[in-house]
Length: 508
Ligand SMILES: [Mn+2]
Image (cartoon, rainbow, N blue to C red; front, side, top):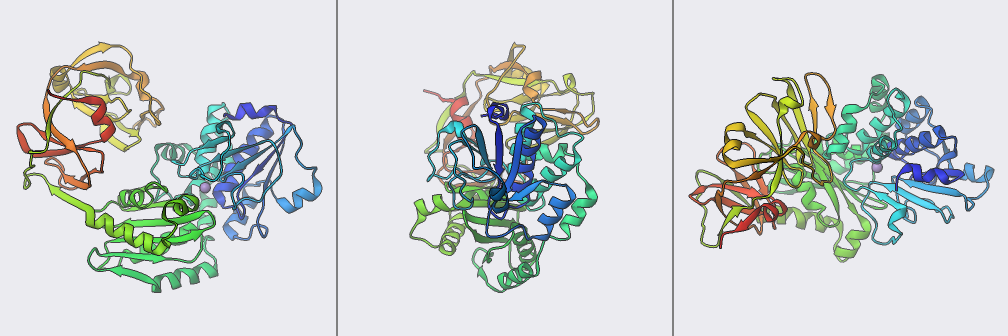
């Protein structure tokens, strides 16, 4: 479903979740602006016990002149929805308990939360991207896709920027590439952001933070702290946890609280053996989502999915069990000191499949500082004349020296296309130019060397400090492959499970 398809309706009501936060307000405002520019009668509404109270939300609405209406007021002055009218729920899902019910036959959902298993709508009604950090990012992208630019619209772009900021704890828990793209691209009113950031906490929330700090649970074996805070704005979790992590005996910390539709949590780590983003993903595995950076991350667990899977367990027990299993099941390997036991490994070789390569000098000037963005993260490098950027079958990107390329690959064709959730993009830091899809510059090649490795399927959490990087480990999860050079049991590394299965074959 794209936004242009929705222009066939006469009147459009956009509804955020009850007691809306800046992300619901901003993403609703984005849709509102689009339909208004297309001469539609459009209303932006929200329900809940009361009108918006939080001072930063009130300030946002007033300063950016966002025409949002309390549903009770709207209802008294407008006719109910008819068969030519449309309801869009944004940053929430029609039928869920956190959104006031409005009776209608025509509705669509634009959201970034986990799809509620309790709702079974036709897929054409839903445009849900749970991988995104904010619904603002989703709407920004939808607007772009149908040619509606937010450039030069400072009110709207500031709103979207603030929506992403509040949903990712001031960007600290930001991880998805499209979220980063929006953050990099949007202009915003800097003074207003300063003001908004100074009116985030209420006195009540100050007290919630105080109580949470007293009620920590400490695990001395694994040096982590776990804190269950009372319901509060997610950024309050950020303040609590940043303070807790400063304690000398605490290396890792998780702070969480209960919301109507699930559990919100923040994760911090200050040791190199634990990455907060990975721990966040582990905590929410199968029942939500988590991500961010190595030191700071966050996530969300959907209530309905949690109840489906762990009905008998209360959330405090779940968190402790999950933390303990993360620490207990993890194995850390320092290459160089460790020799791989190859008895249960098999010999594999690279399949001769087609992959892509880009000469960076066909994209930017020599010696430019470039940043390549993929699903796996950002990589920065200098565009020199001695390497190619390889693009794998799943859109993964890595540099290769031209000399080695000449030895291991043969050139095949002048184009290369790949199907990936996010296509690798390139930003030139020297000129500020950005290229949304790097594969447009890619040519195709095929591996011709038959270099062989020993590999097996990994069945636990495995962290490997490789020979060439002693500071950052490579993470292996169950289903990934753990491999080493056939002639060197000390050179151990991880290959992502899906990449391994597509690119390697067993030597018979
Ligand atoms: Mn949101």
